[in-house]
Image 1 (cartoon, rainbow, N blue to C red):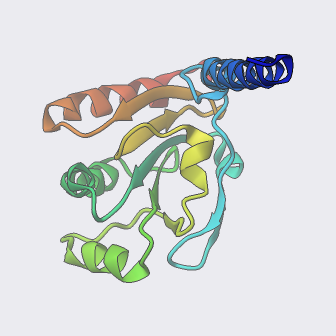
Image 2: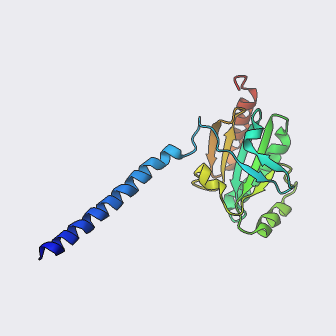
Length: 181
């Protein structure tokens, strides 16, 4: 084997090693940017289906439950009637449920929402381009975040299990009663 060929092989091996090392560093750094309990919630700006401008940072002073969902997601469809009922029971000046849909087609979202009885009365944002899930590092659908009155993430729920309804209740009550907010 010639020296030039050995040199090229060595360069290729070094390049492959550097690329692999770069990916490892990137993957190790990802958790540093993930949304975690105790961290400020990334701001959300958007227009609701009713045409109202909504900004999460303007909701400080209220407990906020953010629900990311899609009409193609079976657990999301199971969770939505619970969230409608949950919001209707706890609707107050100190609580907002913010629903964020990531369907590609508006028709799919609206068809599902129209099938709900009673219909949701909380704000719904349609994030057609799915720009918000990466900011929240979503791992699964649905994912919900309880945000306290100071804008800090206090609880993260991934998926939906009807047996966890009591956990939603207790988390909301704790955050509403927390005088340290």
